[in-house]
Image: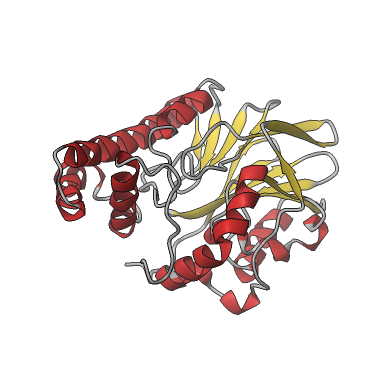
Length: 301
């Protein structure tokens, strides 16, 4: 099923705020201010980013000045060169830049190998995407009078996860810290920190949210369902693997236990099957005390 093209939606979440979503493929957020536009997550290739740009051009002719990377994964960042006006302001957390230095090359090879459909036009990728502006904690970017508050709320999907929040509209762009009816990819995750990081996002009480994958969520009940669904997925997975490790069971036994617990409630989520081996493997490592996720190489896949 990984070869089927997904239907793209371009959803309005508020004044000048849009979500580019594709049925469980990676999402892109669009924030339009007085004098320019910020893109949240750049898509996997410059070719694919052109489709985002066409949608942006259908609603504004303001220049795209900023690209925010929610984290370092290839499928999110390698399209950044499609935004020439933003080359001076490709924003990421300091931690995300460190991960690109440490494992960007391996991640790019591993992801392109695993997910060819998601890298349409991969020959258009000039190489790794390097942030030009990094921060620790929190910073604000002003698009004229419109503030975009960018912060690193804690570890979760990766050690460097970054969100964008637009206070005037109470709208959040969460990257892969939150998913909707899509499996969390946890190959680089910090399971024990992730639910607490989600609690921090819940405290904003946003009226709309763009998750990393899945439909844009408008209205507090829909946002709450995404927060709860993500937390339930993570806690079911990690608690099952941790119990296996405590019983001295093998990685395969842990995997089979996870299937028993999760296939029923989560088996129909986007990319569920694809993520399982990575998710169980990382959970097994973390439950045995390996804090820093082991790098995924094409060979290890």
